[in-house]
Each structure stands twice: as structure tokens, then as C-alpha cells.
Length: 259
Ligand code: CTP
Ligand code: MG
Image (spheres, rainbow, N blue to C red):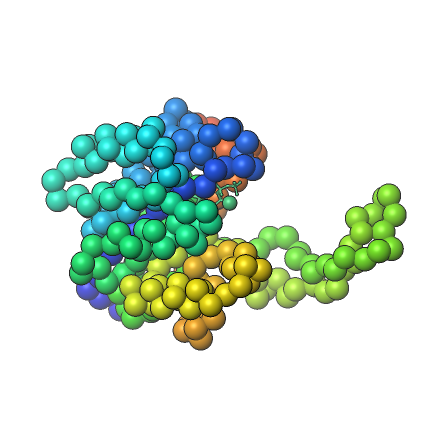
């Protein structure tokens, strides 16, 4: 893709989840990683990438600790840095994204939706996504090849104590599969339309929507994939946190960046 003028971009950082699977008894965004809350790593990465005119942080409703943390971070931002906006999240990730969208400033042309849980996403991933948007894509996602063989299963009543009560129904063609990360990038119009279309979904259908790109796919708009990064892992379980700590402090050291 040729070089193009960057779009005025707002980054929505969704950080309003409760972190059940991590199991720290506090919102995941507040859990320490390398001595700092997970959210701070995510915010520093976004600001360092230089892609954002605005960073809209979506926090657990009523969480004063994370609000104060973001307030101090705002004071640290240099003049000419992005506008930092704080909003309360909702019951689901999609609700939190919509809360962020409602707080985007006038003149926003493109939006990146990023999970705070992907605290160590390298700047290069932000650049690849925004470059694809500037080159004319309406929707862009960072992806990685899948290393495991992926099978589909169905429940069966024939299971015994040794086997899970599931039977394999097929094997996906691994060359065609990709693991999807964030930041996912959209033109503002595309993201607004996508979330508007989600209003017509019933509860079960809504629960099956696990990312924003899926809503764009439902519109029939092409979603382009760019290269993600293994460093952009989503901290979900305690093992992921150990892995992320290892990336910061282990033999590879803090300077290790996978582009
Ligand atoms: N998220 C959010 N609002 C919600 C649910 C999730 O902003 N109502 C955010 C999380 O803070 C996280 C991202 O969406 O940055 C991805 O969600 P996930 O990894 O599932 O985080 P949690 O929902 O916090 O974790 P868990 O599902 O284990 O409770
Ligand atoms: Mg969750």
C-alpha cells in the first residue's frame, strides 16, 4: 500500500472488564505487571506509537483508583499529546466499546478499538493498522497464524468417565485460520454502522459477537488483516501474566520488541 495522509484517529481502550479468569479479585486493568497496573502499559504503548489524537479509556463504573491513575497519566502527557478522555464501561465488552464511541471528539475520522488486556502490543502493530486505514481500508485487524490444529466438536450423550462428552465434527484447514488481536481499526462511519446493526441482535446472537470486526463482516464490508505480534498476547489467565512478566523482565529483557 502506498504512503497516505494519516486519519484523525481516536483509540478506544476497553478496560472495564472484571478479570474473572485472572482471579485477582480486582479489575484486570489494575493488576500489577512489572510493578505497574496493566492499564498503564497499554496507555504508554498507545501514546508512544503516536497514532492517537484522542485516547478514550473505558473504565469499570465507579472505580476511583483507575480514574486517579489515568488522571496522573494525563498530567504526564506532554503538550501536543493526545486528548485523554475517561468514561464508564458497560456490562459487556460491546457496551464498553459503545460508551467509548459516544465520547469521541468531533472531527474523528478513524477509530482503533484496543483491549487494555493486550498491555504489551508493540508500536509497529498500531502503525500497520493505521497505515492500512490511511490507504483506504474501512476495517483492519491484526492477526497471527494459528499453531494448533483446530477441530469443531458437538456434544454427545455417549461420553464415559474418560472422554469428555463431545465428538469431533470436523477439522478446520489451518492455513486459512488466523488468531485475531487488537487494535482493530475502522473508519468512524463503519464502526458506527456496525454497532448500530448489533442493536437488532437477540441475546444469544449478541453473546456470540466476540469482536468488533465480526459486526463489520455482518454488514458485508471487507475486513483486511495485517500482521499482529506474539508480544501482543491478551492477558487472560495467570499463566498469561507470568508470560507477560517474562517478556518484561526475563532473559530477553525489556528492550525485546517483536515487530
Ligand atoms: N472489557 C470491557 N468491558 C466489559 C468486558 C470487557 O471493557 N464489560 C474489556 C476488558 O477490560 C479487556 C477486554 O475487554 O481489556 C477483553 O476482555 P477480557 O479479556 O475478557 O477481560 P475481562 O472481561 O476483564 O476478563 P474475564 O472475561 O476473565 O472476566
Ligand atoms: Mg471478558
